[in-house]
Length: 214
Ligand SMILES: CC(C)(COP(=O)(O)OP(=O)(O)OC[C@H]1O[C@@H](n2cnc3c(N)ncnc32)[C@H](O)[C@@H]1OP(=O)(O)O)[C@@H](O)C(=O)NCCC(=O)NCCS
Image (cartoon, rainbow, N blue to C red; front, side, top):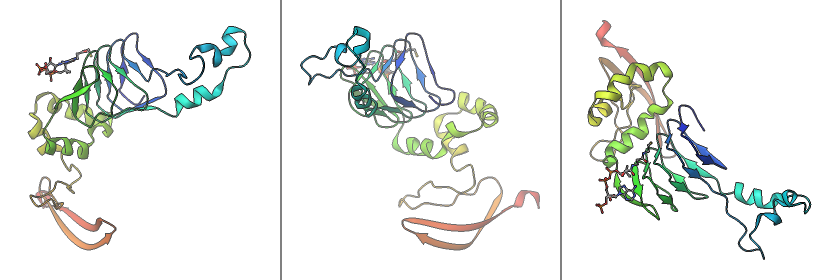
């Protein structure tokens, strides 16, 4: 489980990777282990054998479970008592309703609920989702988060995007034709002095000058 994520009481998580800033409610179970239904018995005694005085445990069952981890992105909210089954991926920004049983992958910024969990809506329109995935605020430093706290609290989402998309000066926001555009933040002037194409990426070298100080 990565930075700032938390799980409340009576949670149970096995063989999972959980990103940053995830909020996991009480009584959530992530990756409950499957039993070997294909054996003559699916009871513990064939793999937790030592517990029953029947010899060594069977590590094969545990590796089989480990091979189906649950992957949870960043800023995912998992509601009270939800269950996320083995091998499921939950995309960044998704929300899982209380009591849901998640049996299929959940796309980023999608709200799912029910048994089995089904998408009920998107948190944001597509362009906003894409911008948040570009901004990746979950990778900001603690100080950056602190400075941006009033904006997280107060800015309407489109204004938040306007302010923070392409913070580094070089934007990836597409124009109406889907082409990436350079965006200049603040008072900067950007001079492109060389460009090469590598696969589907355009690599450019730029010089940035801050005209507000001249
Ligand atoms: C999933 C959730 C976030 C959706 O909130 P929302 O987007 O405001 O959804 P709405 O209340 O408008 O409901 C939309 C539809 O989904 C259904 N729905 C909402 N939550 C549901 C749930 N947990 N399980 C099943 N169906 C649910 C509603 O009945 C409604 O169905 P309808 O369109 O047929 O009338 C919220 O309902 C929820 O479950 N929150 C979890 C709260 C929690 O567990 N908190 C723990 C503390 S961290």
